[in-house]
Each structure stands twice: as C-alpha cells, then as structure tokens.
Image (cartoon, rainbow, N blue to C red; front, top):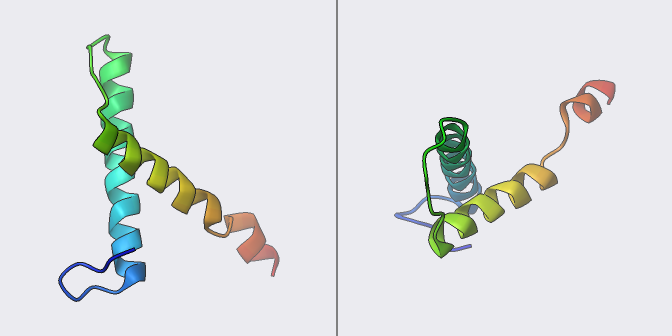
Length: 66
C-alpha cells in the first residue's frame, strides 16, 4: 500500500478500514430504506479492502484469551 502525505502504512490501513465501514453502513441504510444505489468499482474496492483488513485483524476473543 502506498502511504499518503507521510502517513505510515498502518495509519493508511486504519483510515481505509474506517472509510469502508462508513461506506458499508451507508449502503446498508439505503438498502434498508428501499433506496436504489449503485456501488461502482471504486466503492467495491474500498468495501473489499475493508473486509480484507477486518479478516486479518485479531479477534477480541483471541486477545482476551492470551
């Protein structure tokens, strides 16, 4: 991943994850309200990357048990 304005890769990943969570929430809300929404390729990439980051993060149960 390329850093942005001097941010570390970890900072960029946290930001991308947060953006993907917001985007996911917005898509979910629009679908719940019956609004039509089209997720373009860029939005899909952000959602996919957020899901990928979420899958690689340690789970709360694993942290607590250690």
